[in-house]
Length: 486
Image 1 (cartoon, rainbow, N blue to C red):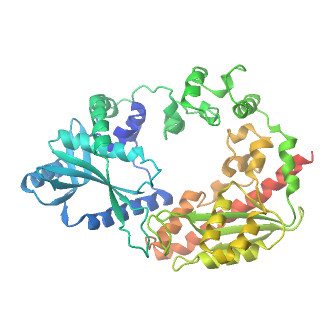
Image 2: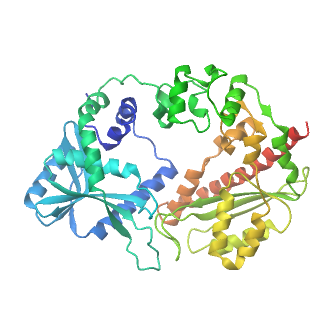
Image 3: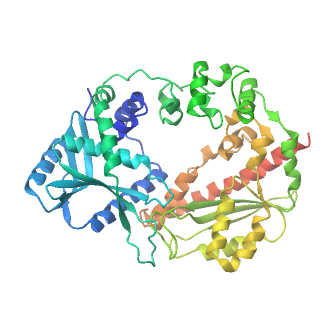
């Protein structure tokens, strides 16, 4: 048997005991820049939340046995104190409460999350309830008498220049108690299988589609056409198809939508499908054509007055310009400095670079959303931005309805399409090669969590990455235009 089972492997096992086993036994991953940013955000939120909760005692965290003993001793000797990082063990499980606070003869159990509070019509993230329910199960069975289970979330109404508090409580006692009771029923089975030396026998289930181990370590190894490639496959449809195991073996009479059948047919045939009607939209493009891509970050706490927690803030753009199909491309770019408020300068510079004529190619609806938000932020520029919106052309739609290739794997994202259409271009050659790391490195630089000596290198890498996004659009446009005329 392995060591105590912690929250993350336990919760992973709810979908599949094999996934929980991998989570328990997997070596520590080297954090990417995007993950480093999320770690920083989590630590920052916890530090601020502790200050908001009030004075309390920080308990030791390691080793586990000593930490659990210290927690029990502190509980026994305290009737008024707030305790942070309380450790509990029970039945082969270990849990650490962010905080516990005396409530009469019992204790309130408090979990701090870096998410924001739900709006009136929003549903609370069920993962938050599960996280707290796990801790409630272990702490309660370890002897803690629990009164309420409370979440501490970032107040969605908080603003730099407003009066709203930074955090709010959300009482989830009833939901947590119900979920904890469910967890207790299965806890023995989870510990037995997840902590075992040998991997539990995996089962092919719908949850495999979102399992981080499916393709690399489990049933999906070497499978190029898993059922999860099928667009919008539901659990019910998966259950009807899983007997076939993979797309190659799905029969003609399977119950699929027209879109799903199209993807399945392309993959089964192993040949691309050209829909000339779908390619006709390319004729709408007007020269000169510009190709635009934003990078943006969503800071957990507002960086600028009037902005909300997790509001999307563009910090960079790349723009390629072609005056004609055979013209030499021109390139413009903007990367914000990490201090001050760059939004007005970036928007005005972008409008200048976009000019007033010609189509603007984007990939997906992301840039449209960012431009609309900038129009709200700067009403004086709204008319100019609205004129830009009229010129947008979404190139991704061409690959949704005009050209499908088995190599796309049922997807139309630029990172799936580019290696097939333009194999000599590759994101893999870039040191920074994905949007998550891009926003992560800019966030870390903005908050001063990146060594100053490394910042010039990272800025260069940001420029290279964003530039490839728009150059990829240029090449994909020209490649599909050739298909259009053949």
